[in-house]
Every structure is written in structure tokens, then in C-alpha cells.
Image (cartoon, rainbow over the protein chains, first blue to last red):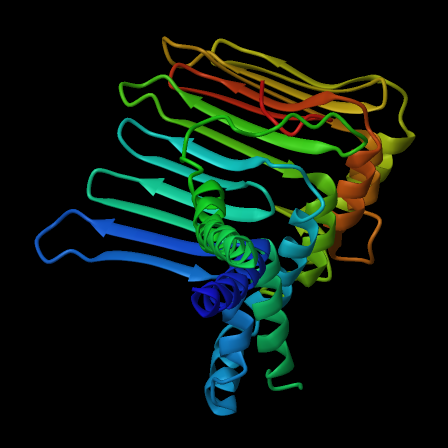
Length: 145
Length: 210
């Protein structure tokens, strides 16, 4: 019984530490639903803390390729994210059509993009710090680096 | 006696570890259960200046567009854009001439002129008024051609126009213009009203549209 309790405490402690770290960094959530024949349905929940770690394992040539492709957008994205972190939760863009809705907003230091249309729904939720980390890493692997 | 304590401790440890194990799931639910509902923005009334754009279409679809941009964000992001004619927050224009009008000379002339009306056109088709008033350049157009009238009013502080033309020759300094705009009080910059759309561009300290 004691051994079981100790093992449970160790496992529980590990989980709570991992969970606390994951929750501190947040979760990247991507939901894509296409309502047509053969349409995609993607539902992805990834701990944001894992992304910068995973990038360390991506082969350098792939990172360099990605960095080259996004070269022009990287400084803009980085500047936007850095500034967005300074502002309270805000709805930056809101488009409401008859049956289509687009929202771009920040919520609790996360960027949230929602697209609701009759033929598709896209919801993206990503911590701003994760976007910043990724842009920094991609810039470090850019052609100038 | 010791055995009883050991069993109690083991039970508490098991309960605690179960609670610990489940706690991240609770936190996960809290962090991801944010529904994409409308109007969750908090109102920020501070020294931050916000540029708002609102387009309301009165057609059957009833389209509305709302954009809220902090001026400081635009000031910081613009210099990072290097594409086509935009570099370092400045946009290049061809020889400062647009349709053979020397914009810089025109701005200089307006700046040094006292308040007054520069252009007044009144016809059956439309009324046009261009004036300088309380350090603002005002353009007012009333289109009467159609049965349903349309009205455009643009009101730009002279300081902003000065800042826009403060860069070198053949350049418009967008960042300087935004900075000058951020020093202005709450003001409506553009207003367009016609039978299909209502467009408003204005500046205030709130991060939400009214």
C-alpha cells in the first residue's frame, strides 16, 4: 500500500508539474471543418510549450527553408506580436456578413482567429509568446543569421 | 497504531495524487473553454490612441466591418514593412506630382494660409467644399446626382498633413503622420454616408467601437 502511494505521488507530482508548465505556456488550438464532400476536419490541440522545443529538433536546412520563405513577414509578425502583448483583450477585426463572421482578437495573451462560414469553420487560438518564440527561432535560422 | 497511521497516510497520498493528476485537466478546461462569443473585449481607456474604422452596409446582407487599431502598434509595425513603395514607414510617390499637381507646394500654401474656404462648388450634381478651419483641412462633398444622396466629409488636422510631408522629397512619412495623429484629441476623420453604406473613421482612447 505504501509503495503504491509513493509511486502514485511521484507520478501525480510529475503530471502536475508537466501540467502546470503546459498550462503556463497555454495550448495551441486549431480547428478546421470544411462542410463539403471530401472536406477536411482538423482538430489539433498542442501544448504551446512543446513548439519551441520541437523546433530544436527540426533539421536546420528545413528551418532555413521556412525562414527564407517567410523572410519578409517575420519582422512584421514579430513587431505585431511584441506590440499586441502590451494591450488588453481587444477585438481588432470584426466582419459580420449575412452568414459569414470573421473575428481577429486577443484574449488572455492569446491570438484568436475565428472564421464562421456556411462551408467552413476555422478557429485558431495561439499564445502570443509562442508566435514570438517561433519567429525568433526562424529569424535566427534565416539567411542573414 | 503505527499501521493505522500508515494506512491513513497512504489513503491521503492516493487522494492527493489523484487530485494532482486531475488538476491539469481542470486547468485545461478553463484555458480552452473560451467560446467564440461576441464582445468579450475589455474597454481600455488610457493614453493609448485607437484608430477605429466602421463600415455598415444597409443592403439585404447587412454587412458590418469593425477594425480597431492602436496607433502605437501601427507606428511600430510600419517601419518593419519593406515592400514595393513602402520602406521604413515611408511611402514613395512619383516626383511629388499627382496629375501634374505639386502636392508639397499645395500643402505649403495651405499651411501658411489663414482659415478660410478654398474651394466652393455648388451645382445641381454636387456640392464641394474645401476649407481650412481651426487647424484642420476639411473636405466636404455632397453628391446629388442620384436620387439617393451621398455625403463625404474628411477632416484632417494640419499637423498630420505637415508630418506626412515632413520626409524627404518624393516621400510621405506615414509613421510621422500617425505620431502626429496620436497627439490629437478624439476626432472623426472620415465620414461617408450613402444609400448603401455608412463609413466612419475616427480616433479616440477606447479599444472598442461604440
